[in-house]
Structures are given as C-alpha cells and as structure tokens.
Amino acid sequence: MCGIFGISGHADAAALTHLGLYSLQHRGQESAGIVAVKDGAVNVLRAMGLVSDKFSAESMRTLAGPVAIGHTRYSTAGSSTIENAQPALVRFKGGHIALAHNGNLTNATEVRRSLEEDGSIFSSTMDSEVIVHRLARAKGERPEEKLAEALRGIEGAYSLLVIIGDTLVAARDPLGWRPLVMGRLNGGTTVFASESCALDIVGATVEREIAPGEIVAVEPNGSVRTIQMPAPAEQRRCVFEYVYFARPDSRVFGGSVDRARRALGRRLAEEHPAPGADFVFSVPDSSNSAALGFAEASGLPLELALIRNHYVGRTFIQPTQQGRDEKVKVKYNAVREILAGRSVVMVDDSIVRGTTTRGLVALVRAAGAREVHMRVSSPPITGPCYYGIDTPDREQLIAANHSIEEIARRIGVDSLGYISLDGMLGAVPDGPSGFCHACFSGQYPTQPPTIPEKRRLG
Ligand code: AMP
Image (tube, protein in one colour):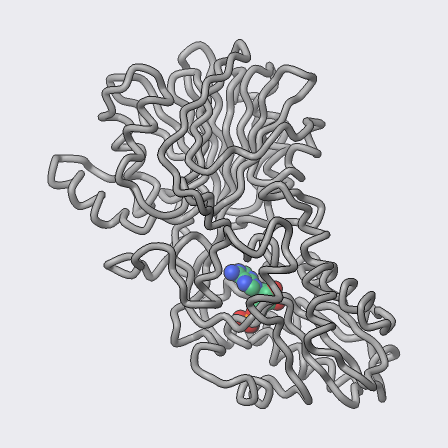
C-alpha cells in the first residue's frame, strides 16, 4: 500500500506535491520521494522515513518545473531499502520515465523473468519496475499509448502516476483495486491523488475518480486525453480502504470514508449488541468513526478510554513479536478513571495477528475494566492480500487458524463479535457488489502469485 500524488501545469509543482504527501503519510511511512520535470530536465529526491523528517521547503527548491509526482511507501518488514523507494526514475535513449505505484502486481515475477531473459537489468526488487522496463520498450506514439502497451498482460492492482517526457499520465487497473482521484486547482491545474484529503491540503477540488482501466494523460498546457483499456463490468475495489486504510476525511471510490465507517459501526451494533455494557470506546484512530456508529446505534455513550501516543509509528511493522508487544504499551495507554469497575465495549476495525488486541485488552483490564466486549468492524481476516495491503502470511493470521471462541480466549475478552461479510458489504458506499473481499472471504479475483511474495511491495 502506498500513497501517490501528481500535478501538472503549476510553477510550484514539487512544493505542492510535498504538501500533498503530508496528507498521504498514513498510506506509507517507509520512504518518500518526489520527481519533478522542467524543460526535459528531471530531478528526484528520495529518502527513507517520513515526509516531515526528510523533506523541507528548502529541499523542494532543487525540484524545479511544472510537473511533479510523489510517493509515500508502505512499510513492510525486511524491504526497507532506498533502491525500493519511489518514484522510480530511469533515463534512457527515449528520455526519462518516472513512476509512482500504489498496489501490488500478481504476475510481476513472470514478467520480470521474461524481461531479464531479454536482457533487462533491474535495479530494485520492486514489482513496479517491470512497468518501467516495459514502458522504455513500448513503441506507441503518445505517452498514454506507451503506457497502455506496457500494461498489457500486467495483472494485479495498480494505481499509477507516470511522467513520460513532460506528460503526466495516470492509470488505474481494470478491476479498480486502489483509489485514484483527479482534481483541479485554480480551475486549470490538474492534480491526482490516492485520496481526496491530499487535494484538500493543496486547495484543489475533486473532479472525479479515474475509472477502472482508464489512462489519463495531461500536458503542461492543461490539455487532457484519455484511453480506456478493456475492463470487466464488475469492479474489485478494495473494501479494506473503507474499513481501515484511507483517512476518514477522504472520499475514495466516490464515497465518504467517514460515512462508510459509521455505517459499519451501526451495522456491527445491530449484529452484535452488547446489552448491559456501560459504554463504548474506540482503538484510536482508525476505529474512531466505527465506534461513533456503534454508539449511535446502540445508544451507549462513547468514551475516550484509550489514549494514543501520536509520536509512535505503527505497531504492525515491528518485525519481531516481542517488538510488537512492547510497542503496544508505548503507543497506547488506558484511562483508569473511565474504565475502573465498568463493563465496556472496545471497537476496533480489524484483528490481524491479534497481537495489538491482546495487548490492548490487557491494558484495559489492568486499568480496572470489569468486562471487556470486543467488537470488530470487519469480518475475520482469513487470508493474505495479494493486491497491496500488507497482511502477513496465513500462518500468522489469527482468524485463519482459530475459531471465534478461541480468538476470544486468546485475546482475553468476555465476548467477541465481528461484523458479517454481508453486513460489511451492505454498509459501505455503493455496495454490496464491486468490491474485493478476498482476505475475508477467500474469493480471490485472480490467481494468487505463483511465487508467493514474502514482501508485499505496494
Ligand atoms: P493485530 O495485532 O495484528 O491484530 O493488529 C490489528 C491492528 O492493526 C488493528 O488495530 C488495525 O487497525 C491495524 N491494522 C490492520 N491492518 C493493518 C495493516 N495492513 N497494516 C497496518 N496496520 C493494520
């Protein structure tokens, strides 16, 4: 999973991209990068770490030009290398190509092997690099035709921003797994971003979502051309974007993330009420909106019983179990005055390994809670994601290997209720069809990668 941002036709393209990346930081904290183009000259800044730590207004001065793209990369254990930081940038006889990718390709291994047999030399282990090589060989006239040619036969999830020459090209895979929105700044400048919150921060307004299978090319003078690749009637938008990934102040897939999460919370309360509980609280921040929905539908008051330290990164990315256990305590603390002696409902958006949840339940009990009823606003995660969400292998997914009763026992709660698959799909905007829910249902829209990638590279 990653965040991508692009802009064409603005004197401060890099500075605005820098700003946009701040709003996409939640989509990836491993590395960040920006490429800008001016009069055929291309410049790049890439760094491991957070946008705010690594880039400054000062550093943006080295990135002149009216066209820029940026990327924030999602952290996965073991793949933190600068070679894998994006945007990817190559210079070749036809000029330069810069590419920022959100998603995960499922046949990258095969495509890479065949390119290598033809002499390609790869400089990273990123799946996205195969698109760059394909682009460099593409014969098409216009940049968007080259990209369409390069993407033929590429399978899996991609929302892309590519600079070819000084043309900015945006594309979304035919199943529409990952979001990509197009906006306008000052009526003219075109802006693209993974989520609408990144348009808000630069003052752009949302024009529309890029359609699944659509390729949009924008020239610095503002002219726009589009190509439609063949796309099946039914989309496979990632429902986990609504559940967990996107920011609640964003619109993705044309719907409000806040509204989606509240509806998930309401539905969860209908499916798994907690009669007799004193109040409900969220695991901040990703389940705040779902907990609000639960409170609304159940009539229980909402309390702020867990406090999150905002200066700590995600627990999920700690490579060792011990590291993850310790990080829960560093990241969260419980408010004793609220919890002591009470029967409580804890709402979280998902249980993946169960590590965070177990640690949180222990914290809440240590603060004196009498009963802990856990409610989860997504169904049990029973399989890995091959399309850009970094879920661990099946062996580590608690719900792939244990019944609900066993999970409840392991995480130490008095009761446990997950929203149903139908409940979730009925609650999100524009549901219930047209979503990918493979990690919950096992219904994978494509063949899983033949060589399972340990690291997910989106
Ligand atoms: P776990 O301890 O593995 O069960 O972690 C569950 C927590 O991780 C939940 O609070 C989620 O908000 C969060 N989470 C869920 N999916 C992901 C993901 N793919 N990457 C990072 N965090 C996640």
